[in-house]
Image (cartoon, rainbow, N blue to C red; front, side, top):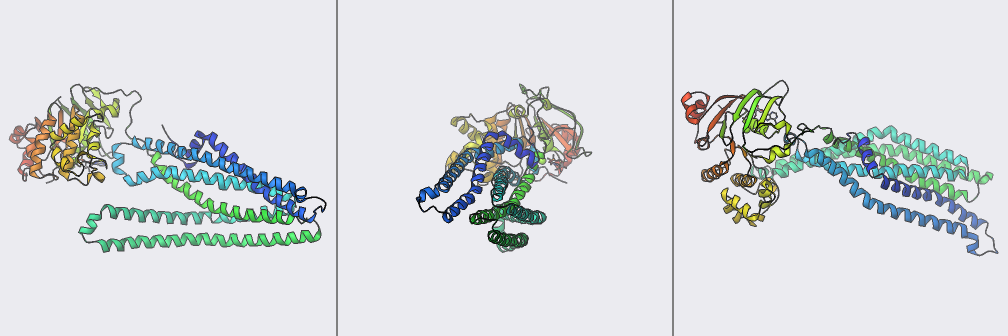
Length: 587
Ligand SMILES: Nc1ncnc2c1ncn2[C@@H]1O[C@H](COP(=O)(O)OP(=O)(O)O)[C@@H](O)[C@H]1O
Ligand SMILES: [Mg+2]
């Protein structure tokens, strides 16, 4: 489902979804606005009552009309406000939740590559900003723009009862005030968004320092970071001053216009009373309405800056939705079925950038249950090869077949249910060990979890953790060592237990003791599975049926370790460069 990309179309979509509630909200707001403009009229009746009091009648008889009027008015307004509160109580949380769900829905279908090339923090902030700014824009628009405009219209109608002169005067002042506001709006808006940016940068920098707190401490760079943050803080202060100054400047002109308006109103009131075209009651009517409008319209023009600011934020955040999904299921996509686990690349053309193919016509077949090692210098395309099997990217031309089915024609979900990848760095959720393990199989029982953990040689260290299997592993699993994280990944793969297994082998994280354990676990895991391992470790390669030697996106040699060594080609060259049991990453 495509969501609209522009703020107006996006907001309209959700307002329409909740139209019944929004209509009620606006109706209650109109009742409030109408009453707001009627109060000065009742005040006029009071004052006129005082000046023309009938000595024979009681107070009630003299003032019953304004008393009843003002009470009814107030009660109606109270009821309207409380009802609008009830509606907001139900409306806004649902309104925000729907937006957040839809946005998340869109983002989650992005390709794996999208997430590795966009900062998680920035995606998260945008998902949070969309509902927040939308709520504010709509709420401000209803209560400050529509409501105050309505108060304005009804007030000038009420004031016209006294004299059209005041209607004209109020309209003139309003036009001047809004003219000044719009004349400077661009400047105020750009300065406040500069200020907003500088706050965002400052926050981003602070978060970056916290993320790298251990480096800061161990490199003894606390003072350096304090100094560095000060420069961002200084920018923030400068931008804040500049934004405040821009607002002060507009306020100066608006203030001057307001002063002229009030002085003219008072002079005209006095003159009208002296010349006899105004009654005593018109004094409070006109004065109160004018003061009231002065405050409201001033408020509205301040809020306009917020509204435009939020529109800017919303427009920025909606960039999330402008990014098309690069890997999509075809409408006709079926579930894949993988009874054997044979993988075949047929003339695969793929490149990360246009006109720069990494694979230009790669063909290779991996038999069911075969154990294949991928070797080659860094950048030769091993990780890409493995990722293409999971359809992390769509290929330019050619086919990738699993048990004869083109992976571009099946659902991504079913494909990934049948393939397990253990990546080079194991990322864990900030959840318990158990939750991280069952990610491979949500229905695994405690016994199955423990059995998998034992097979992966991690039961021992898990038991020694603070809360055993319930220990929360820390953000990205940072509370565990690299080797421990990798063993959890292997346990998780045992639980997922798919016919195809892909490993982007880590070379550095393991000490030799752990490595031996992992070696045993891996062999067990690989049994009865088609397995591809990107391998640097000679001890791993020893167990492979076949080795594919990658160079600049091509498979330049293939065969068993023995055959390749005998051949004396690229693999033999890599072999000659081996160091402490590892093939080199680069020459
Ligand atoms: N996400 C990506 N976007 C752009 N280029 C990439 C990306 N991933 C890898 N590459 C490039 O593709 C080439 C092959 O990379 P990779 O498959 O990671 O090699 P290997 O795993 O053999 O080290 C390299 O030149 C690398 O810079
Ligand atoms: Mg790699």
